Amino acid sequence: MVWFVKKKLSGELSPAMENEQALMTHEFPAAGPVQKPAEPTPVREAPLFIKVDRYKEMLSYFGALKNDIETLKQLGSVLNSAQEMFMETNRALGATLDKTNKIIETLDAEMGRPQGLNIDLELEAKRAEMKVSLNELKAQLEKLKSEVKAISS
Image 1 (tube, helix red, strand yellow):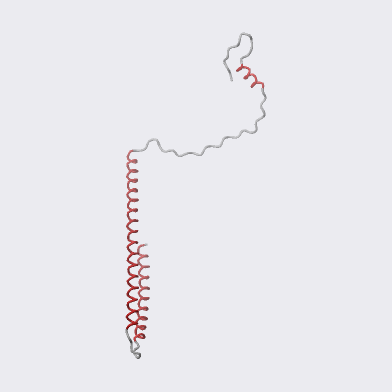
Image 2 (cartoon, rainbow, N blue to C red):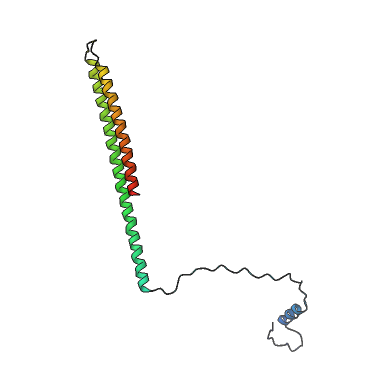
């Protein structure tokens, strides 16, 4: 390291030259093995120039994606409203069934029956037949659902 400093007329060294001489005469401790700095990982940078056609194509893709997202949002809101309508209908159906059942129980309790009449046995037999038919229909419905699922897959 060289410093360009004018010598003073008196023959003394300037402070900058004294520092340089002190550094030259100073012994530094021996350094260990030289370690190479780790190589930086390559960073993928965006290209400086891209083709205009490719840029327009990418913009159209982004526009299509935005439209798809908006459509999905609208479908979600439609689905939510359909679920709400289903729940309201289900509640109304349950309330109607409860009212009808209470009316039937009230009428059944108010009506007098002759002791020799076995209406309950006939009703139980019909109910049993209906339950069997209902179970068969449920099995057929599940079978049809599985066939539709297999066809759509």
